[in-house]
Image (cartoon, protein in one colour):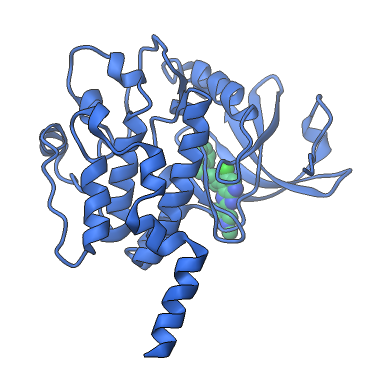
Length: 288
Ligand SMILES: Cc1nn(C)cc1-c1nc2c(-c3cnn(Cc4ccccc4)c3)c(Cl)cnc2[nH]1
């Protein structure tokens, strides 16, 4: 496996900084090239001053570095290294050639079933890898998914991930759409650190890929109420297999959600993702 960017100690002078690629709540990302190897990467710059006032965001960044550095999976954005100067923290990240998935989703308004199924299969494979390492992402949503040059998707932004179990006080910000009922309901937070929260979010993601909007999208108050009751309607034009997998993931009881192994074996995934299946479909179409 090519392991670029080997040196342990990095510093800013090693990189030629290119165009800005985007900005998040904390920090910006630039295209960058490591001078000696010409290796292209994405350099995420976070200002320490901003992190200090971010209410424990500094710990989140430390966690992001600790967790993401040890992950190696084709559908997880690689973190090659990090360094800092007096004012900033720098994360050396894999460059995803086709950028942020949610921009593709908004541009296409929704994905055809074969494309959605392939993305969900890649997500399930990445989540299976994470859960085997007892890492829970907890913030699966289109905004945290990037796309590689060959159209493969890459989970990024491990700021919210945790090593289960964990007694972290979590303050939530951003969209409620993807929160599972156990994180909406007050009361025991044990379930917050159960891998099954990612299964719920995978169901929300499947729905949003196919329909173009999240299943519980509403006013903040109504969204919380609808999530707590798993109150959603799936448009009738969605195929019955796709409806089935969504219904088996968006289940209130975390223990009754479809396990990742069964997601990867679900008829909707097999139909669109197994090579033989596609060739067979093509054969069938041609023979008509
Ligand atoms: C944009 C864009 N267009 N194309 C053709 C490729 C890209 C691209 N973007 C990235 C990006 C990238 C950029 N912005 N963001 C969002 C962000 C920024 C700062 C903090 C948190 C989150 C990620 C990355 Cl990390 C890694 N690789 C990237 N590639």
